[in-house]
Image 1 (tube, rainbow, N blue to C red):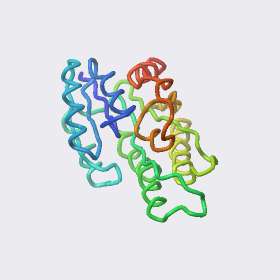
Image 2: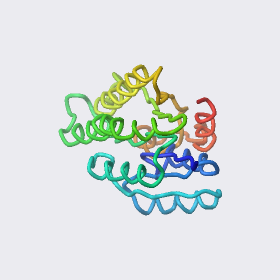
Image 3: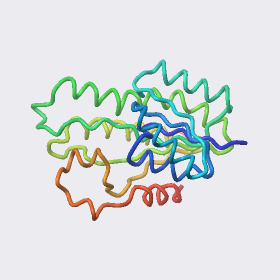
Image 4: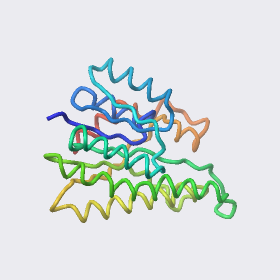
Length: 213
């Protein structure tokens, strides 16, 4: 049976690193909005000896994601692993200055899409011999200027922890992990000018996170 890894937010950062780490053992279903970045990832997956199915779509598009999940079911019948790294990093701003468009987009990507995807992906994971979902915490809730990102990321992780508790005895297995700081585009938006030499290599971090589950 072909092992299938669905990675939402796969085009760069931790998502891309996870795809490359899994490429030797899994067929990668890579979801991201940027077609060019997905094509670059596909080249790297192939160079690592793997294969990928590219899905250039927005995780907030419920119809598109439902079509993708149906396609995974029809082609393979299951998904062995779901790594959810898609996130919206709204600009840092005081809570009283949060713009409605930034709040709405943060809520849509970080929380609402997560709830929708859990509902859609769970049957695929349950159809696998040992289906697993992985979420990645970034505990910024309550930190100054992180209102939009911190609150909606915390909502995402709360959903994941509830799902993990509910499925502890029945599956799928759900893990919430906390990656070490990495030189990603998201972090660069939050900490411009930071010395990135001291940050963890995304490839090494992906392998560490995968080894622990």
